Length: 433
Image (cartoon, rainbow, N blue to C red; front, top):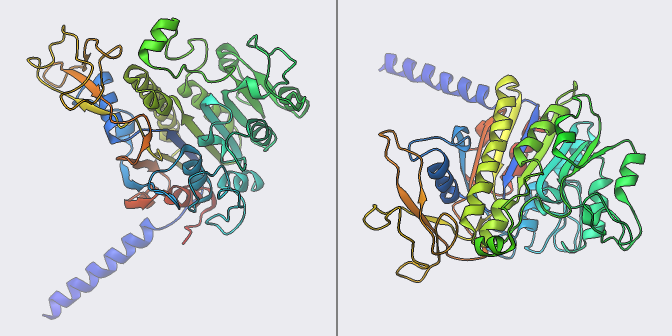
């Protein structure tokens, strides 16, 4: 009995020691990647198409997993702007919120009125945002702008440009130049206040760029840079049929991908003795999903996954880095239908709807040939279709995934406010209650 007691005592001490070591909080870099509108189901679809049923996405290489609860104050499903606000402030807000709680100032989980990005800027960390969409997209914008309405594009854009961020890569020239000036993309701006925010940026120490070549040729020691890679978005968020009729691709081939932007942002932000905080959003995943464009959404998912690879490549050389990824909702309710070839022959056009009336997409839209997976471990490839349940953002099977610094905090059943908690611990060395 005495011997068993001694063994139990030492086991208890061992557990306590391990827990204490695991709970040691350290400060470092944070890379938050927000593939908007994605879920377990959408990443499963991307895995099938690009790597096969036995393959691995870069998303799969993030070992820490939390089950994401995404409700807001007044609804079960978040909007893009309320979800982003919750990530940026770590506290619940109502659904119609952009950096605020409706029209009220937000008190953050840290007890102040600053977003986590504003706090990082104030603390002297290097900071940046990357978005495949226009500059006003809330997945990144709500980290540095506050507005009574997400439609206040002029004010939101001005706040982002003048926020103090070191790196801004996105689209959206339309809201950066006056409505009597023609911009780089040959179109007239939409600002009614007469401001040219790109000229303001250049006068205040920013290098302004527009092309993929300019991005690739940026020196590592660039201090402040704004890259505007489209007049609006870098993608064309329409259905497959609309894009085919207009002769448009899913993405503008002349714009850098979100992965290319993320890789360059990391290179610039990490080129100092300061830690950095980067927020990246692939917005095409959400917009193609809301347009029930399976071909576009799967391409967008691959681009988001490539951005995760850019972050992982940096992490493997710099382990004092947290990579965390999450989406606040699920766009379109995408599901994979994977039937045998006897049901989905690879050379036979799919029906427009399944037997219950839900919309089906093949490889190039409705009533087209099925998608074909990459080979499994036995070399077999399989046909599949994409089924849609809605055109809205749904309460989906969303996950928080991560790796690296303090990532043990990503665990089990987690609230959407906990994204802030995990990032805050890595940036400031404190776990908030």
